[in-house]
Image (cartoon, rainbow, N blue to C red; front, side, top):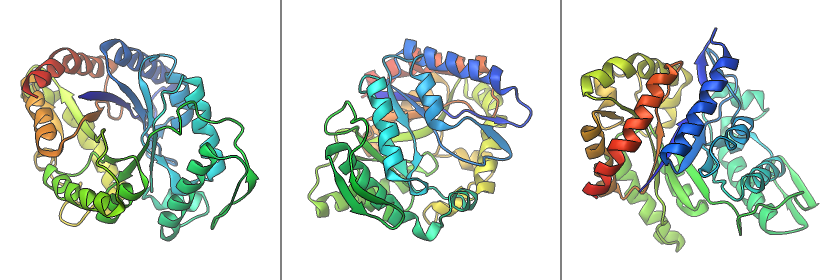
Length: 338
C-alpha cells in the first residue's frame, strides 16, 4: 500500500499567506521524512471566499522539501488549458524532479473558472479529450500536427520531453459514471474522488472494469483513492479538533456546486456532518482509521491513498500530529491487517 499527503494550500481571507507558506513547506518536509510516497496539490482559480496558492508553482517549490516523494497535481483542470502549455510544464517538472511526476487531470465544474478561461461546461469533455491526446503525442512524438477545437499544432515539438518514458502516468479524476468510463479508455488509472460514499465507488468500479474490458485494457496495477482524514487518540478528540475545519470546507464545496458533478443518489454535500462523514471520511483513532483503510483495500482493491488532512487554516501543529499518528501507528496496523 502507498500513501500520499495532499496539500490544499487553501486558507480563509485575512490569513497571512507568507506565514502559511512556511507551514506548507514544513508539512512537505515532514511527509517526506515520515515515509509518505506521494506529495499532491489541487487546482482551483478564483477561489473566493478562500485564498489559494496556484498548483504547479506550489508543487515546483515543495518538491525541494520532499526529495523522495512522487509528485501529483491532483488534478489539473485540463479542459481549461492549452495542450502545448501543460505538456511543457509537466515535462519540465518531471525532469526537474528526476522523473517523479504523475499527471493528474480532470474536467472541472465551476462556472467562474470556465468563464474566466473563455470556455463553457458544454465544451469541457471535448476539450479534455483533445488536450489529452495532444499532450501524449507531444510527449512521445516530434513534429506533431493536430487541429483541435481550440488549438492548432503545426509540426510542434515540445521544448523538453519528460524524463519518464513513454510519459508520466496519467491519473484521470472522475465523478460521474460517464467520466469513469472515460478514465478507463484514456487514463492509466482512475483517480477516485474524495467525496463519494464507498457504495457509490463500489458501483462505479464495476463500470470501470466493464469499460476496461470493452477497451481491451488491463486493470491497472495502481488504483488511487483520495480521502479526507484526521487521526487523533480517540474519535471524540478527532471530531473536536477537525470538525470545524472540515465542516466549513464542505460547505464551501456545496456553495461551489461540487454536488452537481456527483452521481445521482450521492450528490448532497450539505448533509449534517455525522451523515456526511459516514463511509466518506477516514476519521478517528489509529485503530479505527486502520480498519477503514483496510476496508477500502479489501472491498475495492485500492492500492494508493491520497490523504487530505488540512482544511482552511487548521493549525500546523494539529496537521503534523495527525500526519505522525497515521505514519507511525495507522500504517503498521494496516500492513498487519492486509
